[in-house]
Image (tube, rainbow, N blue to C red; front, top):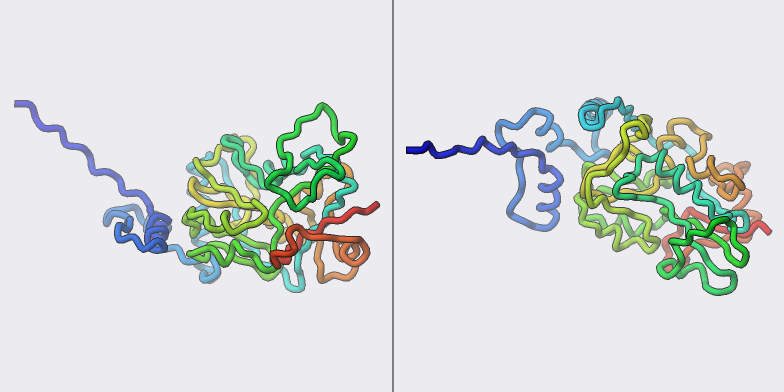
Length: 310
C-alpha cells in the first residue's frame, strides 16, 4: 500500500501587519507567528510604533531592517532615523511661470526615493493645462499623459503636484493605526511597518498624493539608493501606502541640502527651505509673490505654495 504523502509544516510568516489590520477592522481571525518562528519574526511582530521607541530599541530595529534589506536586495542599505531639527518648518514653492513640463523632477524623485519601476510609482505628477481653458484646482480632469516632442508647448502651462504637506492633513486623521503623522518640521511621514494598507488616507487626501503598492516594488539592484531614512526612502513593502517626504533623508541628514526635485530642475522653478528663517528663499517667495495654495477652501493649509513670478 502506498504511503500517504505528508506535507511539511508550512512556515507561518509574519503577519504583524495582518494582525494590526485585523485588529483595526475588528476581525477575530488574527494572524500570529507560529510558536517556533524565528526570533527576528517575533521582533518584527512586537516592534513598537516609531514614536514610542527609545534610542536603544530604534537602533535594534534599524539593524534588523538593514539585514532584511541586504538579504532581499543584495546590497547594503544604510537606514538613518534623524529627528526634526529645532527651529525648522519646511515649506515649498513652485514658480508656474518657469516650469516647462520636462518631468526631470519626476525621474529624479523616482531615483532618489527608491520608487518602484515595475509597476511604476511616481510621487510627482506634472499636469498640463491649456492657457485660459481650465482652473488649476480641477486636478482630476487635468491632462497627466501629455507627450509632445518638445516642451514647453505654445499655449500651455504646466503644474507639478505632489504631497502638499498640509498643516491640517486629512490623511493623518483618517489613519486607523496612527501609521502616518505630522512631524515638528512639518513633514507628513509614514511608518511602513505600521501601515496596514487600508487606503483610508488615500481616500482622504484631496490631492491624490498617496500611492499604494499593489505588488512588491520592482527596483533594479544597481539603481537602489542605499542612503535612506526610516520614514522616507527605504524600500517599501507590498500592500502599504507611500508618499513624498521632502526627501527627508537629504533635508534632515544634511541640513541645507535640497530635495532631489529642487536640485534637478533646469529652470529654477522649485524653491525649498525653512519658513521660520526670515532670510530663506521660500520665506521671500511667500512674502513677496502672489502665492496661492491648492484647494484652500478645504482648510488643509498646505505648506506647498504656487506662484507666478512674472
